[in-house]
Image: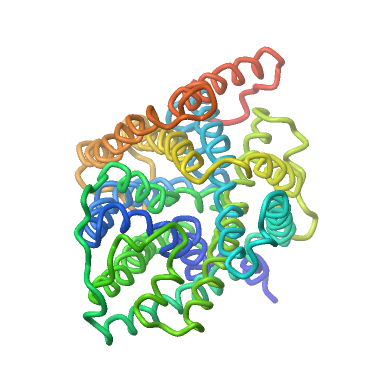
Length: 444
């Protein structure tokens, strides 16, 4: 084996990266049921068409430029640090990591929800939380095996979870006119867009493993383009196909894809396959995101922004095993929160981190105009600023919605603001303790 071939062993290639991106962003059409139930078929399809245009596409364009220009481990943290300085780089890492605590609690919750379809007693109460903890532990062990192993399994899991939806769509198209579609009395467009934002969020996550991707300058833009199309199609086509049957949209509930299959005359086997697909999607997304998020504290620790023990890597796979275990432990603590609260907080914190990435795109255009950019967002500086405006507008909507979501004695917006302020305090605390050095190049 030549040295070049050895260098490629374990590297993440295009299609495994597409599989990982799909799981990080979507994990299948799960989670869309509430959009259909609250907005009807036309409203849901409209939301799922609009949201990628004003949220996913701008983000994917930004990620494509920055990941191809700065293909380094740490991804978005590196971009913000290089473009705006160490303080803002720390805030980017802080927002992403704290957002991950709420994000990563969602997927064990969904896994347990689908598992309960087989045995409600098995997933009830403390048993459900225990199963969630075990799932997080399994994904942590899986990730210690390395990014190559995780990405290859991600592609396989993506194909497995999408197969039942392809069968469902074909069955629905071949059996139109079943039932009568009810008129939705009140469309909560804001709630639908917020849930759609969560379902279309995560395009930047895969960039934290850039150092482990084969030919990242070419692979990332191509994987992003394929991912945007794949996510949109796998969201819209199954819902559009079921709409042809005339099934009452009010019958859609959280985790209700198996019930939808039965309601339109599908077999018990298809309903069972959708339940299993839900479990695969939740587990696969948790596994892929463990790979993405765990690289962040390891890289920040290398920059002396976090304890140095987080830099320890496995001798064979090079996986940051201490960071993986630490993240897994933190994620397990939020398993008791409700789905809606988790989504609200995740969208708020992760949305703010994405805005920092757009700011880094603009800052790097100004500070480093000669930086080699294999892919460049068209339109010059105006184009870079223009693609940031739609996500900013959607984040404002998320803030409005979070203001009405209670979390204990305060609301989700207030809790989010406290978390943001804590990030500022933690940076200066680390600086006073001498843990902040100048090991990363970038404007201060």
